[in-house]
Image (cartoon, rainbow, N blue to C red; front, side, top):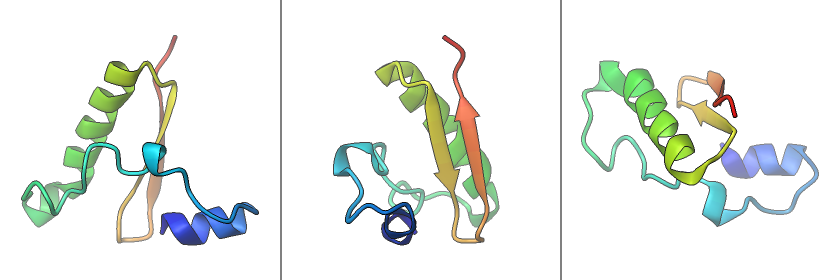
Length: 71
């Protein structure tokens, strides 16, 4: 999904340092129904740890959520 989105945004590639920095949901062994909650929780932790302001969460079900961590 990231590679396709990068192409649509006029970029030739996505920055690997910013893509799936905490590993994928399948890699850590989650129950299928908990994918969204698991990824949102992980994303919040990554934003807190890195001091990031925005995070994008996507799933294979073609949905996406942007999360903003207030400064």
